[in-house]
Structures are given as structure tokens and as C-alpha cells.
Length: 371
Image (cartoon, rainbow, N blue to C red; front, side):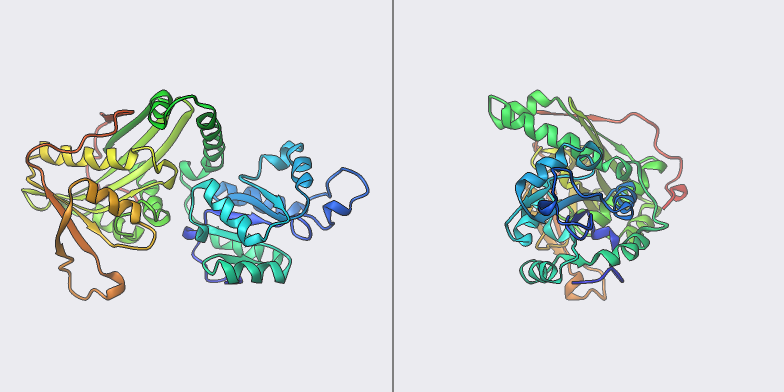
């Protein structure tokens, strides 16, 4: 999957840069001193521009591990890269490790490498990964021009750095996983989206895959959110390490008096495994019951990526009630409707996560919400 043209930037979460011949001209291990080669200014500028759009950067170099030690001693280089891999292993294996360390799908990576061999190796073993030559970088940057940048996007690199601190603390923590999550003091706040939160909701709809119920497009989400009887909810999260920002979005269809239907439930993969997805879903169920609804439904489009969401819906007691009744649906667009009664006991949020309702006033009209 070579080349930068025609690529949807919504699917890109991290650019993985080669070192020798890509980030800099020389070969680091052949340098006569311990000083690193001078990085190409245009590559550093590209890394910084992408970071401004919420795109992470990492490293994958087939070189001596000591090169990474030298790079880590240079703060202006070290701070630009997350989960770097410098070793003699294959580039495809390095990319797998980067994706695992960052908690993202390997298909969300893009490799920039001057070597046709290395690009071919990655394309053969990781066919979902796009590879680019260094001369393709300007076209990559052009794909992001003019796109709205949310506060969460601008803070994404810093928040992944904070996540590294969380992971390190978790590895040192003497106790169970649940005890660590309690110690983190995790807090989730949920409420009707304010106008300035809508762009982030649209971003979640476009960029999330593991915890995304239906893959509703941002354009469709924006249109539905402005329709009568629909409400858009957002969830924010924080803990002792800092703010996660808006990590969840849900569109609710209240056009039926006894029914709450959720055409989209989407959460950031950064909060996977911490109970936030379950807590958000259970909060919506409780809110629906308080509003007089008797039944709760979620629209689900099963994909290879969203198994975690599908398991959550099943664990919440939701079962298939109907196929999507809308006409003209192709097999690729086919969705199912899962539902459950709101009578009796509802699932409870994880004990380590404090959940509260935001008290800010809802926007006067959903039709005034910017897209």
C-alpha cells in the first residue's frame, strides 16, 4: 500500500519513521563519534506538523540498540517519538510492537522508509499498513491541510506520554489490577454535548474502531444529531495522572416514547480495559429508564475490529432483536439491532470508577450545533 495520494487521514494514528536515510542522511552506526547525524529539518517540521493534527510519531530502525540510547539522550529528539523500536528485528515486527505498546491497531500505522526492501517487507507481512518513501511526506501533510483540529487532537501526544507514566506506575504497583485502578482515582463525567464538544464526537466516530458500535460516519452523525428527538452525549475522563479529555460519544434516538435507541456508541481506545465503555453504556441505560423508556437498543455493525464492543453489549444483557429495517442496505453496510428491557436490575459500573452527570446546561437547540 505505497503512496500518499487518496488516503483517508482519519485512519492514521501514528507515523513510524526510519532513521538512516530517512530522518537523517547518514548511517548512525558508521559515525566516527557517538554524536548522532543531524536530522533533516523538513522531517522534524513534518513530525511537528502532524503532532499538531493529533498524529503520533514513532521510530522503527534496523540498527544497533545503542543508537536509541544515544537518541534518548537528546531531549528534542526523544520527546518527539513514542514507543520507538531500534534493533536488528524485521520492520514488520517493530511495527507490531509499536501498535501493541500504543494500544492501537497496526493498520493505523504508516511507515516512512527510504528502503524499497523494508517497505516491501512490511507490505507483505502487514498488508493493512501504508508505506511511504520520504519524498511522499509532503503529500501526506497535504492530506491533513484544512482539517479541523480538536483540543484532544492537539493534546494527544502529551496524553500518550502521560499514558506511558500510567503504564510504568502500573508495572511497579504492588497489588491487583483492580487495586491499581482504584488507586488511580478514575472519574467519568457524562452529559449532553455542548456545541464545542461536537467536533470531538465526530472525530471519535471517524477514528475509533475497537470500541465503536456502528461506524457511523461523521457526516451522518452530524446530520442525525441535529434532527428532532436526537441527543448527543459525551463522556470525559480523568485520574490522578491528569485529564484524558473527551473519550466517548453516544448518539441517542428518542423518537419513540418507550424506547431509547443508540445509533452510535464510540470510545477512544486509550481507555480500553478501564471500565469506561461499560460505565458510559450503563449510564445511558439508567438515564433512559429515568426518562421513562422501557427498552434500550444499540445499533451494531460487526467488524473484525470491534469484538470488544460486541462482547460488552452481550455482557450488558443485550440480545439481537431485529436486523436493520432500513431499505437499500448492502451486505457491507448490514447492521443488527441489539436490545434489552430496562425493567429490573441494570448492570453497575466498575467499583473503581466514579461516574457522575455533568450539570452544565444543554444547548438550546441541537440544530444550532456546529458540524
